[in-house]
Image (cartoon, rainbow, N blue to C red):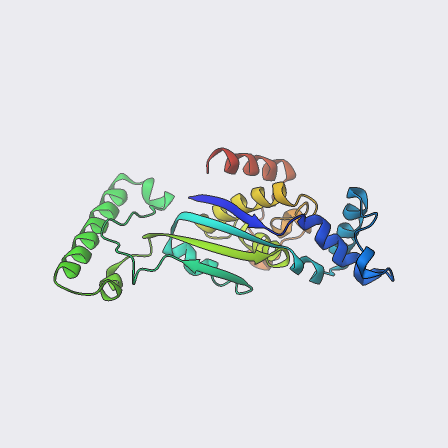
Length: 236
């Protein structure tokens, strides 16, 4: 898995703070950036989060390139609907030599991993055979597994990203999208440290799990979150 922050709104922290200032100030909008120091930005953004006034966050957007992830992950990702996605097409792009993601639980068992690889090879051979017989890629793809890797571009605003991180950085999130979420969090905290200073699972940000009776009972510590951020930087 590789995640790259391709582009984002210039000075996202400043922009969100300016939007917050506009809501609470009678100043001329043309002068809304004047005197908006780093300390003032931090104060305004903290006030936003404490008040739950999240609409100013929607003015900042971030675009990522995500590669080497499975179709199983992309199907989960697009459930975050306030976003824009562009994904490599299996209709127009041949998957003759497709790569795939092997879950850690499969890797832990030599027997399971051998069976997994064997079946993937059978699928690849069947896919290629159908294409050679004249079956269009768009129909041959019906054989392809969720493990098949894909690449996509994703654009989300800061408000949606905070929601994404709260849900997907949780220990109960599926392992692959959980890994993606921590990588995205690390990139965002570099690009917009004030906006994403409080970003991550509910247990870390709010001090309370949102999973109710399904809670894992193992809240993240700030030290653990910091370690996970460093690991995602070292292992793209």
